[in-house]
Amino acid sequence: MFAEKLRAATESNNSYLCVGLDPDPERMPHQDVVPFLRDIIEATKDIVCAYKANFAFFEALGIEGMQTLLESITYVPANIPVIADAKRGDIGNTARFYADAIFNEYGFDAVTVNGYGGRDAVQPFLDYDDRGVFVWCRSSNVGAEDFQDLELSDGRPLYLALAEKVGTWNEHGNAGLVLGATWPEQIERVREVCPDILLLLPGVGAQEGDLEATVEAAMSDSGGGFIVNASRGVLYAGRGDHYAKAARNEALKIRGRINVMREAALAGGNGRRSSGQ
Amino acid sequence: MFAEKLRAATESNNSYLCVGLDPDPERMPHQDVVPFLRDIIEATKDIVCAYKANFAFFEALGIEGMQTLLESITYVPANIPVIADAKRGDIGNTARFYADAIFNEYGFDAVTVNGYGGRDAVQPFLDYDDRGVFVWCRSSNVGAEDFQDLELSDGRPLYLALAEKVGTWNEHGNAGLVLGATWPEQIERVREVCPDILLLLPGVGAQEGDLEATVEAAMSDSGGGFIVNASRGVLYAGRGDHYAKAARNEALKIRGRINVMREAALAGGNGRRSSGQ
Image (cartoon, rainbow over all chains, first blue to last red; front, top):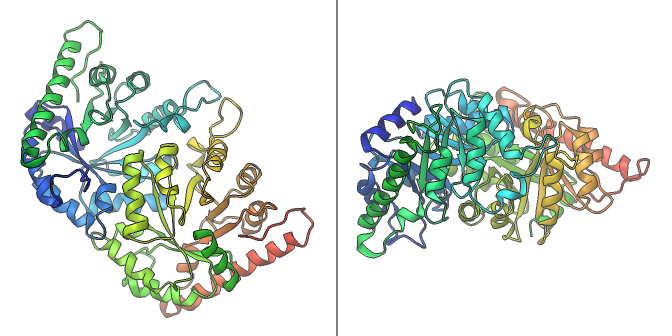
């Protein structure tokens, strides 16, 4: 079960931080992707709860991209889950094949998907009840306003209607939501309607999300956990030969800030309680 | 330019039919994907205006899937465009890498994308002004109702708001929309607000779209073209050794029905006019 694996990794590494693997040739200290990611993973594997591989960066490497991705994640310890950040979404018959690729062929523990196609676009992923499925809900970019924030006739923004619906699809307890850490207010609104769902929160670091506000908004007194993801901010924290050490230092810093904020909230004050995951 | 290439292929093959390449191991007459698709392409290449490769089916083949896809489409004549049906969508920084993969690394003429992330999720694709970009608007599945049909506070359904917005992003004239052929009424509503945009219409054949109603709804007197896509209905028209001949016959039949409908509409009666593309 993905949720159990994540919980165990969170406990053993005392961490709610996921590190995103986004190899950008323009920013990497050298051009060998596998050794670069191996170094990042080895420098952070005892202080993260998960890794998230962004498929776009590997597909852009060309025909060998997926091989490079799979080779890179062989360095992830078996007890740390790896999330396929693929944002796949299509009608049911097609979604079945995407799910087969990501869970069976590549063997990922969890995936991000796009729910625009509705329930039958998401269900083929949810049917793998031992894997996690994060539906893209409220994104971290400015374009999030174009559609996700559109007001429905019942007064709700679209992203909130999506969150509620995904909550009703969570029969196997393996559904989650992706919410940009750049928008703590929206996280709080989603948390109110989905108190027990797992949240994946990217956008900390390079995208300047407010980490403390994000953690506070994501905490739940009904058991819903969260994962904070940082990609560029960790991967490219340092240039030159010390990139692995710089990545570790940055990851340690973010892990610490999350834990401080979480403990402060648990100690009372805002009335929220959460075990995190 | 994708639009010009498409128009030329439409004219030379007298066809508005795109054949979808969806290799499903459970339905293929034999398990050799490249020879199967080669036979399908060779049996149809003089009667189609484009091919559409559904990435999910190739990704599900495993690590060699993309190699299989690229090898298969080497059999497509140089004058026939190939659409990457990938439904990619993510924040701008990530979308740049997906666009790089599909247009530069793999060399496709056009792509389908998911617009849920808003303009900056789509713009990196549109920036390739010589390629086509079809934004998924109203899908052919039952789940389309879950979000795409939600009524906004201004009374419009979401898919229509998306269509209008994509129309305003079409600065390079290379944007299009994907609309399921299973819903002619929705096609007609989109055509009213986007008279000059190119429509990709999947769902004919296996999904039992109403072909005549679809063509009538998609026609425009303002130059907006359309492409009708059939995948399973053509690929798996026949079993056994005669699958290529059966595919050709089915493709000929659909091409003929589209052309008859188109000519009837052009001859008057419904007041619509269209050159198709």
